Image (cartoon, rainbow, N blue to C red; front, top):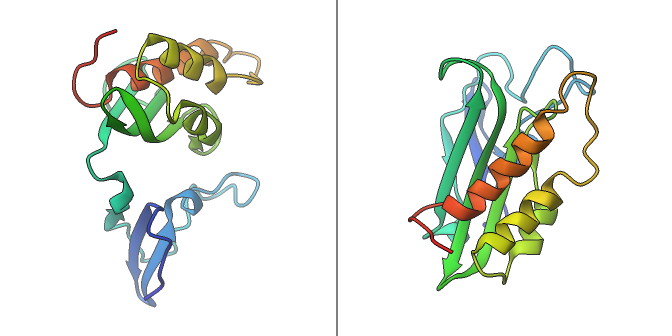
Length: 165
């Protein structure tokens, strides 16, 4: 079986040719690669497991989806985070947004910027602003920029146990 760097999330995909282990960041494909598919799944394959690295043990997780109508509706923007905190200091973080581009986007620059910072309003505000720096909107979707900024801020504030400033 293929091995992965233990600090990376991995997806387990069994199929007729055996089991594949795919790094999470390589699962989604965009229209520039194949306009007919959204992910790397081949015919008769199915995603059966997601392996979270042990380096994220004890992480506080947060997910929020903003949509127009019901829960099954497409997201306008969503955010997922895993944050490891020691005291009130952020030790490790993973932040991903979706519905702002053709594939989910990991915010590695924001993750790096919040490491070692206190989990407070100032850090949340900085992360939200950084997440949308350089955002390029299309004709009718500029509303996604403040949505994304606010969701990133909320992920920093709220992941896991309640937080107060």
